[in-house]
Length: 376
Image (cartoon, rainbow, N blue to C red; front, side, top):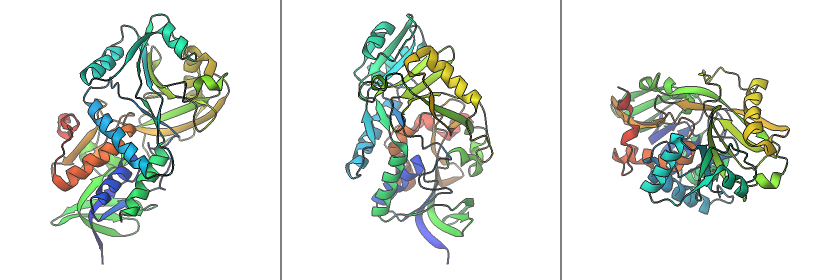
């Protein structure tokens, strides 16, 4: 007989693991299906650290979601035996007249966040790792930090297990279809039925949701870790997570943690749209050179030997905002996709939102700007 569940969650990475945990905590009989391991390094929810920021220059509407996400991360951490969230503060830096700084300040003002504006000289005095041009400035927000993505996924899966969820790794979903009673999901192991389906498949989302074709676009991303000349300067207790807008692009990074190197990445790295099943996963010298040249210019004390390079995947939407919605033709199916390189910090609240949409058909969170029909 085909196994039957209340809800099936397709993909158990950052977003999917949080969704499975939320549903299981609400006494839902839930099945999570993961193509790879739990956790794994083939998608977006890995890489030792993920930035957490509240001064959200992308749009002020993200701030309440980030606040709720932090509450949920601390709740998850409270019954897990390892730390998930590290408070470092956050820096957003750019030329003084850049719209990024104005947008970050607007988000802080609109939501009553504590912040401080620093000149490039003041920034270097406080955090000596920086060497920004004189016409740059920075916004410091003390509540930023970083998350440990693999540990967050493990913690959510362990919570889901304790609440009775079934999670199957190394089982690839082949297809799904709507039925009179809900959905039927076929995998390379068998078939399952459920009343409802949640699709959190990351870069593979378009394989399961036709409406996301051309909207949720996978992109190759590379992160680098470089040995600092003075590691203490770049330690988590002295160096905040950061973003930096420069002529070379918009970059981001984190202090030394997990490996002996200062972390740096460039948003939309080399603008390589890829097939998530067939792309160059091994970082190249060109990838390394792009990151190293930036570090040499703006963080020269961190431009020592390369310690680590790794690839991951962004899934970008045309406006760089998320998709959180149910499908118009299948209201029993909820979708989360297109997190555009800044989504992991929200995984905990995305899980809550998807559980709300799945069980209630709505959520108290303001997700209007993430509707799928905005691209019509």
